Amino acid sequence: MKRLLPASWIVLCALAAQPTIVVQNQPGAGSLTMTNALYHTGPFDGTVMGASFNGMPTTPLLQPTGARFDPVKLSWLGSTNRETQVMYVWHTARAQVLEDAQGREIVMGAQAPGSTQFDYPVLANKLFGFRFKVVTGYESTPKIHLAMESGEVHGTIANWSTLKAINTNWITEKKIRILAQWALQKSPELDDVPLFLDLAKTDADRDALRLMLARLEYGRPFFLPPNVPAARVEALRRAFDATMKDPAYLAEAEKLKIDVDPLSGEQVAALVEPSRIRNPRWKQRPLNAAHAISRAWRTIRWCAALDAMRQTRRCPTRRRPISCVPHTPLPTFARSTPPQPRPRRASSASSPLATWKASAMSPNTRR
Image (cartoon, one colour):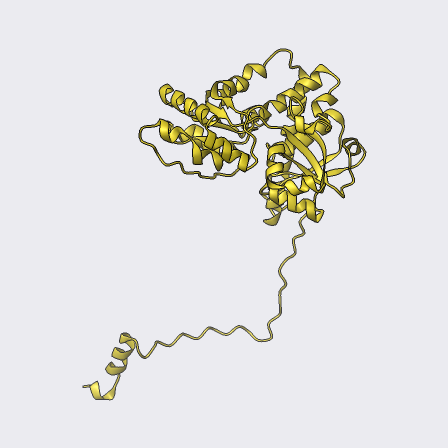
């Protein structure tokens, strides 16, 4: 979608200058690096727009130390579609239905903490007692798919629209089994697949799930940094809305098998409003679930830092070698003969100084 949208955005016609749109990827921490940089350094004239993962607006709640922005102060332009995410495994995996994951450990591949591939399995473990083991570090969903085919992991989580677009044959040939779907309501195409929200038995569990599923309502959001002039924000919002209705854009999206179910910038801003999170009815249960995800993030970072420190035999909290890393002194060897002084290197005969010395010492030049 990030490739499709800039190619046909009517903002090129809405703005008098008709600028050229350049897509610049800035990976890192699930859009956190890009959002932090754009929020603080701009530019603040509307010439740079952010296209983040849908989990970015809730990151300050779950990862307050890493998020250096306020999602409410961002100028939201809109979202191209709502998303339904599916949890699926390879057809030879030990879990063939969702209930199997409560008695058997299922290895799930993920890109990084902060993505739904990581957050949702951890949330399912916390709320419902599933046994999902999340392995992070994959660069992209296609890399996780390769790991599934090789048996390195059992499954993962991805947008239903993405899975249909890049792995249609997996669905038609039944190479994967869809265990569940993550959304606020069932997708009409997945009517027989269980919805995780239906597993909640209490209001506290449902509130915790709604908190984490709200990001799917603005599945692919676009935004501007704060302090952009209001007139320019309004012009870009209306251009975004017009693009979502443009026949050429819709035809191209259908060709690429990409769903279009847009939200306006005002609708996205209303969903991001933190008052929905600070509502008094959201008791301790959703906060405990959020804290569990935060603890999992910190554990992964600590393990990665510890592994890196062990390579240099340094402990991150002490300035002496780690005791668990054996320190072997270098071997010493007895010399059979005493060391001899190094001979001085003779000057090259072709150097000007050597030539002058030779001519000065010659008998023919003595007086």
